[in-house]
Image 1 (cartoon, rainbow, N blue to C red):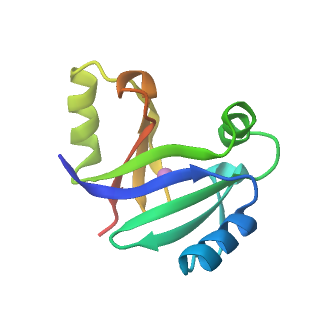
Image 2: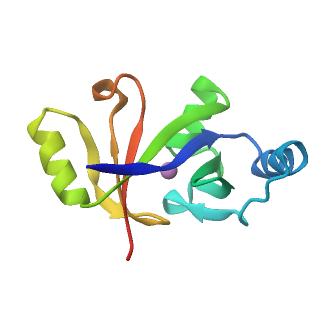
Length: 132
Ligand code: CO
């Protein structure tokens, strides 16, 4: 069961420029960027009410984010839903024939997994089970 939207991922070319945009245009502070994705991305979070905006910049020319930006340019990348029990969720999704990308792995907020946009009406979906 989906509990709520956790964050919306947005691909950006320059994370400092994007953070400056959120600060100056919307008056929103963002977290200090951290390296994620095994060293392939830089991530900063901006809180808007109960939902986070995840700014994602490729860290170099390798990895899926670098390819995404090259192909599609800046913009919406994925939606992340918080779930109660990620393994139970994956089992029921797989039973329904939904394509789960890879295995469950640790992310910034807890255990995460991605669903292929092919099975989700064109939207890359991330599921997160938050740490207690
Ligand atoms: Co995310």
